[in-house]
Amino acid sequence: MYKNENGDVKIGSVLISVLVGLIVLFAIFPIYNRYQTLQNAQNELKAQNYLKQVAIATAESKNESAKFEAEAEVTRAKGVAQANQIIGDSLKGNESYLKYLWINNMGNNTGKDVIYVPTEANLPILEAGKR
Image (tube, rainbow, N blue to C red; front, side, top):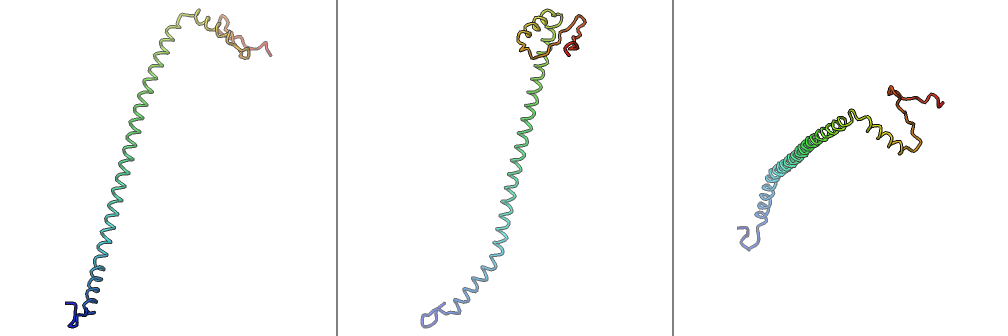
């Protein structure tokens, strides 16, 4: 079919085949280019959705962590409040123990601290005579 009577290949047939091939190639290339652009856009959309899901999961994790930390802080504050209540109740009407603690702490004094000694009316004697 592509050969003449001598068995040689017809150049016109080859040229027509090449032209048809080029026309088909040029017709397919824009379609493939659009397909490739669409695929890239879909891949970008998938990547953005994944990043969005990661950001949401991170935010939810931080929110949950903050809630647990707040609960722990409330629990700790309740414990401190109860301890203060117990200490406060045990020191009521216990003047002699408080004086004992005060005297013991006097022994730990390095001599550089100013100590105000309460008087009968529980008012400190100021350093008026020192200056």
